Picture 1 (cartoon, rainbow, N blue to C red):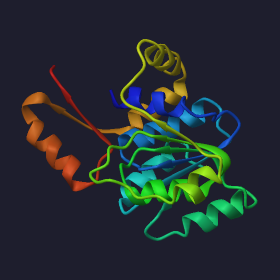
Picture 2 (cartoon, one colour; picture 1 turned 180 degrees about the vertical axis):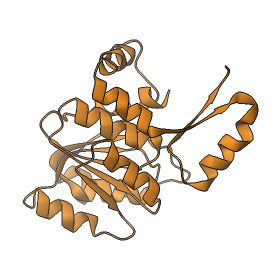
Picture 3 (cartoon, rainbow, N blue to C red; picture 1 turned 135 degrees about the horizontal axis):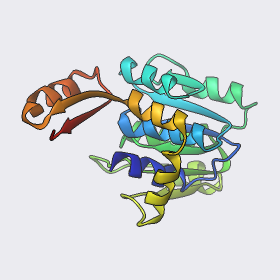
Amino acid sequence: DPLGNAVHTVFATDFAARDVAVLGMGPIGAMAVSVLKNCGASRVFAIGRKNQYRIDLAKKVGADFALSSNTDDVKEIIMKETGGKGVDAVVETAGSVEAVELGLDIMRSGGTIALLGVFAKPITLDLSKKVVFKYATIKGINGRLMYDTWYKMAGLYRLPKFREDMKTIITHRFKFEEFEKGMAAMRSGQSGKVVLTFD
């Protein structure tokens, strides 16, 4: 399910040989980083907020830049690295008003932002400045595409590097009966994807 979300969102953008920013470094964001790097994105800027463990995890699975919006001047770094242009595409997985604002700010004119995050409150945007005059494309993403997403996932799993990345992102495994340990690992913030098994 989370990998399907990541694949669907990434492929909603024109990412091949392009600079892409991924906002939100939960497991889906980290999976999106890996999908992008294994499928031909030029450079990937992974942007988290305050969870350094997960920002570091993104670096392990291929992010060219792993940044914290709390401590790094993300816009300045990206504009410098892209010659003032901005990234070609943005993948938003955080469900954060601030992430959407930042994503539109760091995206080049004519770029695409794909929104997967689910938002707890309405967003107010300067649509003229951030969307209309930027000629931006906004895509809302929900779930997966049957069966296209599954075919892409099957192809990705043929790549040894991708399989290793998924093993890296799955940081904890517990038996189903130990679900409380799994929840504690998730709440600690010191985890990637937590998996419960039935064996």
